[in-house]
Length: 218
Ligand SMILES: Cc1cc2nc3c(=O)[nH]c(=O)nc-3n(C[C@H](O)[C@H](O)[C@H](O)COP(=O)(O)O)c2cc1C
Image (cartoon, rainbow, N blue to C red; front, side):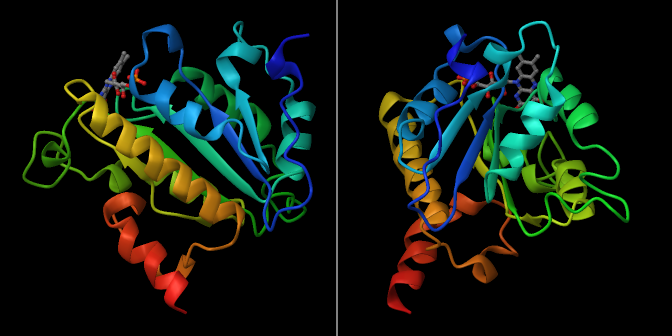
């Protein structure tokens, strides 16, 4: 049985149990996502689940995925941006796992009240992700299908944790993003993220000092 067949348990002694669903079809070539996952995968209270490792043939075990979701309070969808969207396996995962009568519909309440965070890396620089830029939309705007899916399922959507400009990124900048990612995951787990203050942000990691500092001051 591979590690992803039975992801490491999140444990019980935390404010919120965090499930990181990770999708990268070529992890051996990754520079940025690899470092981000290294920063969080062993954290207490965090379950790390590598979808391409678990399902290299796209044969998703729907009941297993639904059980995992039910066991956690925060769901993180981490992946590189591919064609302004998710890698293909994540789309398959959504199509199969988020069933009517379970995730949505009058009887579908399994995900109600859980938090959802997208953690995204992009090759394009942040300046290209705006109305005047080459990509014409912000990353948050491009993730509207995920935001709306989240809301349809009764979940609470957070602005994305976004790392732009991955191709030319110096090592120390990658390290800084990995530290920020760890802070965000820990704050979510420990219920230290001021959720109301995040709602208008185009990305969650715009100014973490103010965001997390404000919480400590309360
Ligand atoms: C098939 C494919 C599609 C991609 N589409 C986009 C895109 O739409 N926008 C973008 O900014 N980068 C795009 N990229 C670049 C990836 O987002 C980038 O390589 C990744 O974020 C780097 O993360 P890593 O170091 O973990 O692999 C694409 C890359 C591939 C292979």
